[in-house]
Image (cartoon, rainbow, N blue to C red; front, side, top):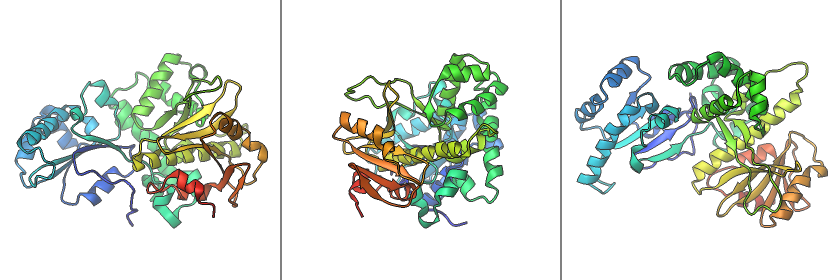
Length: 400
């Protein structure tokens, strides 16, 4: 299988690498650190040994002095290992404070969930290790192999992208999480309730979160729904997007929007019936696809840009606002191959409040042009242009 080059560039010091299952954490680390020693905590035998005696890790490290890079895969399964790793890092800093020391060990700790690390109160190595994220593929990583139609339908998970039977992979994806994370770690009291919640909240993908409505649909209380959403975020399966309210000139809503982390996962869990319009589902999938690209692009770029949305109390909404020291763009996404000038209303109102911003309109059409100060871009072109080496401002100014 051909290895797809990723934009993630590992640091030279110890770091955490968080990412949902199937995004390719182990694959990229095996490629980048070919001489590393990997300890896979999904290995039942190793898991039992280290769970019973976390200090055994120190003995393993001491017994392999020639190993310079240690990868501990799925560290959230045994958080008790973190103090052991912390001791080794602190010892190195005391003995050789310079990162370039030839005998210095580097620890790479991967995780598909931050839930257990947070709830056990274990600190993330006291700031001695960086926190990095790996996301599903983005279009610019796939290049000519990227297809917008395929991405909307089956998402961008490497686990799924490399599989011919993608439907079966997607249908079993959340079941795997239910088994390995939710059930095994006892994150919820009632699996049936959580399963209903996963389906119910799929109707909120790309929409404002209303905990009370979801609670009524699932026949559980709103507090439990909030806890379930927290769990989804901690498992790196979903995101809550905050409203952009910097120097607001009008009254805005305070609720968050919700997205599953991958368009294909959303498509696999979203129920379909005679009352559901395929275009509505595909539109939400496209919007989520744009969001997951913006999130990954911003993270890999490392400039601290954040993604918001904007919605007034009167119901005027802009899908995304990218904001940072050098980026300030409002982005509207439409699942339509026809441009309608009326669709620029929300962008126009946002720009009237924030004249410093630039506005993009992303749609399913083929033509790129500028209309009323708004750059109109085909969705496929826009997604392929999201290379961390380039800013969105540069993309905006590329007129041809």
